[in-house]
Length: 48
Figure 1 (cartoon, one colour):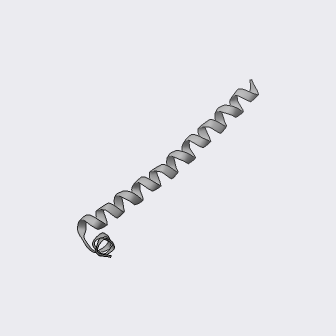
Figure 2 (tube, rainbow, N blue to C red):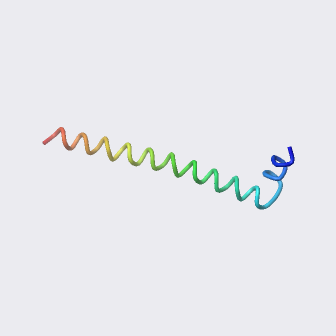
Figure 3 (cartoon, one colour):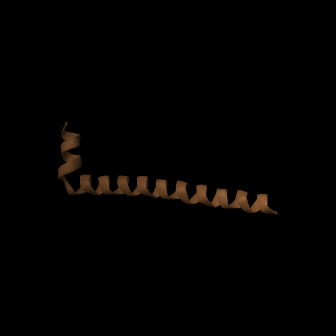
């Protein structure tokens, strides 16, 4: 329980939450970016 209190109430806990949220958001962005690029590549290869 102390770990959860520390996570939400201390500066290092809040910074950890910020970093975790940033990493998750970056993973979602990379997944969408690479999926879009792969789909564009398949369409371009199919048109040739």
